[in-house]
Image 1 (cartoon, rainbow, N blue to C red):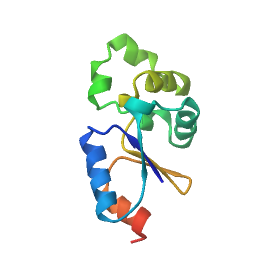
Image 2 (cartoon, rainbow, N blue to C red):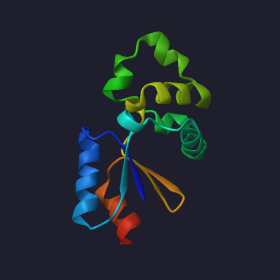
Image 3 (cartoon, helix red, strand yellow):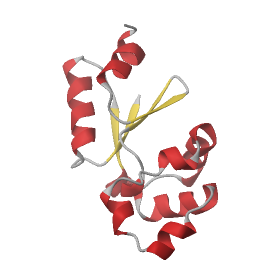
Image 4 (cartoon, rainbow, N blue to C red):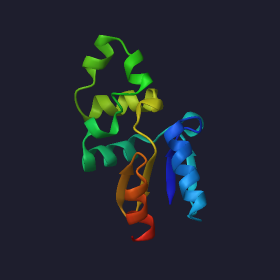
Length: 116
């Protein structure tokens, strides 16, 4: 399993701690160092909508000017923004058994990873 995010994000830290404490192995993909693949983003956005993938409550989004925000209005423009500024992607993100899981929710993790 691969966990996508940035290492200094508090939510990513919580997810990594939870996975480690439950002995769940994962590979960490650091958006800041490794970037993010446009094809992967397109797949995610087709599954869940670009609006769910782009974190419009985060600091990166809030720092955009109004014109930059207005320019993000479809999958293509969302992919462009996310590849240029990967911190705008909601995190953490997992691909688990073909399903995209976003954010940190211990209850969802228990169901998904532990079958509870």
